[in-house]
Length: 135
Picture 1 (cartoon, helix red, strand yellow):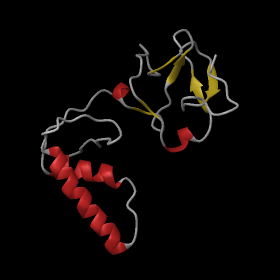
Picture 2 (cartoon, rainbow, N blue to C red):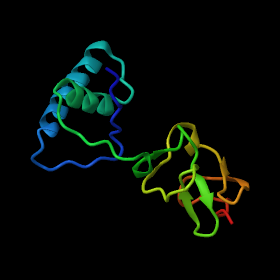
Picture 3 (cartoon, rainbow, N blue to C red):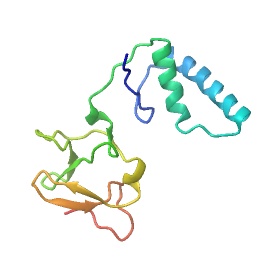
Picture 4 (tube, rainbow, N blue to C red):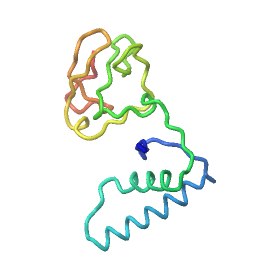
């Protein structure tokens, strides 16, 4: 089976959800392995969460991508009329959480506009010093 990757960067769970305890156990296991092998595991928290949910078959509800837009997977679109970031595909729905990650946080990106104009802009907020907010 192909299982979706659950992003630990934006999520919500009830305080009494069994996911917390299973996640904690897998995190502790990961930290023990790091100490034993002397190497840091990149994205250990996310790996532990996915391991807990998928191995234990815990329920989860994947949300639409606009609820946690991963900019390194696809750049968002800029709407100059509303000054908001949007899904780059029509009907250009407004994005909820914009997850600036990987290479997209280190330099201005060529962001397509819903008006057909591409602008080089920072996706971080506020824009980096010396950079203007897109117009």
